[in-house]
Image 1: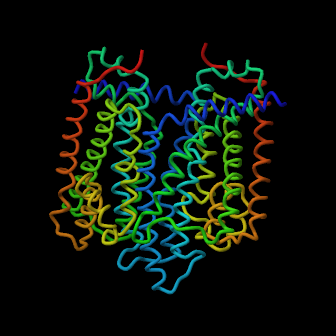
Image 2 (image 1 turned 135 degrees about the vertical axis):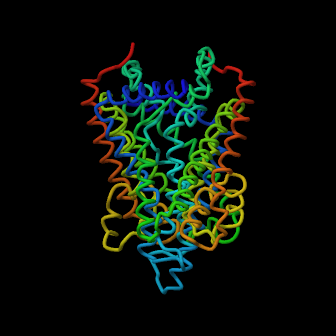
Length: 262
Length: 273
């Protein structure tokens, strides 16, 4: 509880300092544009080429939006881990955090916060709602349960990826660019209809990092596509496994931390 | 004049050597680009399969589109998400005052720094990624240019794209020296080339009635025109048109950038001590 209050205080401080700039609200719009731009290519293709077999635009966008919303929530509230490698490890600022009598996890998570990042989860949720209406899905308690566990599971999964990156950055210092494969690139894969995803990608994004487990399978469970129902409930357990593993890496990294700064 | 050129050239060499240090970083970037573009290529593959079955043919064939994607992945290195990090730090922490003390034209000084940062990224990340892409099987990989003469006009066009990308970034940098507005305007300006250069979708796949406008607007020159020359959807005989568009817009941005910069520097506020 104390940690949450502490986290909130740090975040509040970041918000106050951000709104000092005259053009701060421009960033909100910018991220909104940026976020809408990402699926723009897919939407244009659907408009020009029409549906892919049984896959309509709404179906693709629903799967996509589930992944993007989770990603957006994790990125907004754990932004500190996202910028951690470049900001904290290389600059040596992490030393300062070690001196304070507060949880390292909370301090790192709240070391950066950008209000404008909220554009992403918010627009993601809007797209989910739009798709559900278009696909004519009624929100039964079971569907709602699947939807919410999918989002929580997804958020936890992406949070895990960010934390793991930071843990690895203790050793590599730079060169964590490849992590994009598991963050920004990972939700691009949901733009391909599931049965057409090349085998290797499907394998990586199901078993290595469960991005399809938190997006495609819950969507399938809600809309009754042809996957077994139970696969829709795997999002949360899968997320927790990823998160647990990354906490291990993070702790391991801290124990072996050697300062790079002065 | 000659002194400025010499100083800028040596600055360019220093920054270039510095940027070439980050080899592992570039390597991990290559992996990212390969995965990203592979996913895109697979997505387009599915679309085209169904579109052709439905009797549709867009401005491009599938083979051309996939080739386009890989060329784009290479040229994306010319297009940054924001302005050069180093310069941004200088602007925000007030070191810009220090830069102004140097007996050098600030515009060309920064221009050469930006170029050096990009050349290193382009060669180590973009070109290597592009070469590896030829090895990808299943029709998802890069292909040879449409013809030898396409390749010959592609090269100078990439050079012009470099010039254009940097000239635009310098214009944004000049505007960013107004610190009181923060990052907002800069990011908004950087969005324009994202959409209009063809980095989201090949411009020729956008609706037909927009095509002429899309070709004449400045940002086509950063990715789309070189890529068109490569895949042959713009014939080598029309290359003079594409390249003169690129040069025209580069010149416009350079003049604008210099003008904004000289105005801004008169009333610049250096933050920090």
